Length: 186
Image 1 (cartoon, rainbow, N blue to C red):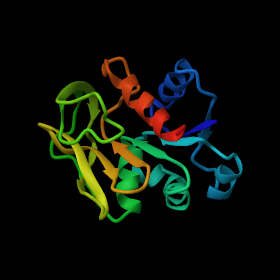
Image 2: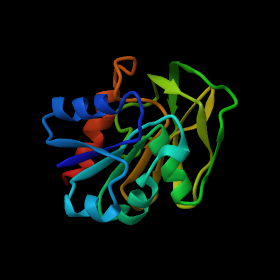
Image 3: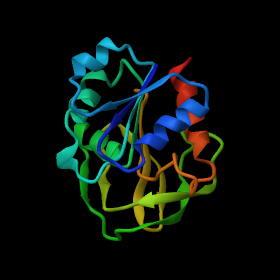
Image 4: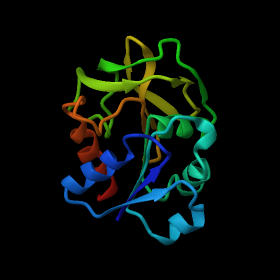
């Protein structure tokens, strides 16, 4: 079963639905669960969803810290920023705060962006953004308004994307989820 950790974001239910459409058992859970409660559910993969503020991310950071390495994790928007923080990166207010379609330029396909190079259109949300990669991570993609649109850990199955692959404005977004499922189910 896949878990979607909801961080009060407007698109968390779409992450849930996308995984369901791809034929996976999935549960949408609140960010108030403890890492131990999440561990007891024995998830196949965890998606840490978006939300308006880092301060309202509940136990998401602790869940990432505890389960990274034992369960594949994909962070989207706020989830991406939380992964950066947990692993020692930096997050700041975006220089260009916007909600818009953006061309995402793939720097390195890796497992999560496989098949999406050289670029694709995505819906972006740039209130905050990762400003410095955490140690042990590589940048996978950028855009004109954001230097780190996607990142991956060099050895652990931990990925972050600033853009929203779960919405219709990201036409090839389901490919990100298919790639994540492949990582989770090997």
